Every structure is written in C-alpha cells, then in structure tokens.
Image (cartoon, rainbow, N blue to C red):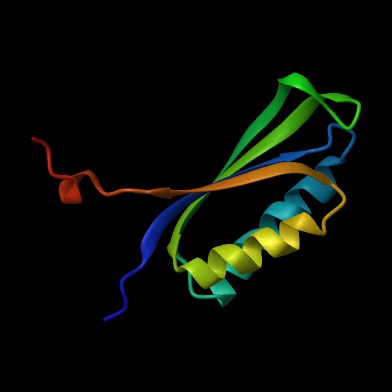
Length: 105
C-alpha cells in the first residue's frame, strides 16, 4: 500500500489568456496528474481576480485551484512544468494535513 499525501496547488494565469488556452491548460494539468498517479483530482476554476500587487505589470489574474492526492515527485514534476509555462504568473503548492492525524494537547 502506497501512502499518498493530499496537496492543493493554486496557479495564477495572465489575464490576457483566452478561454481556449485556459481550459486547455486545465485539461493538460489534470491529464498530467492522472498519468503520474494522482487520485481524487478536483479542479476548480476560481475566475479573474484583482491581485494585491502587480506581477510582471499585471493587476489581474485568473485563478485555478487543484486538489489531489499524490507523492512528492509528482508535485516536483508538476511545478517544473508550471515554471516553464509563460502563461502562468505564479503557482503555489501546499501539503494539506489530515486533521485526524493531528494530536491536540
């Protein structure tokens, strides 16, 4: 049995990206996650939002959130592919902890 961690990745696309490119990227990353062994993949398109500060002269961005279970190698591969995509302004992946495994004192 392989233990998979829960992860949440949020990435911000440039606001001038067309809907076709946007949905193509969503499908590409979802397919990549499936191919690399991720399970329970949930992708949510959060829409266009105003940025707190400008990034590369952009004041708005298109937010996409992905929740999935996988391993660390999968996250490293996913972030590397995002790093080289010119349509992505920023990305962040966090490992989510299971509240059942947290001990409270």
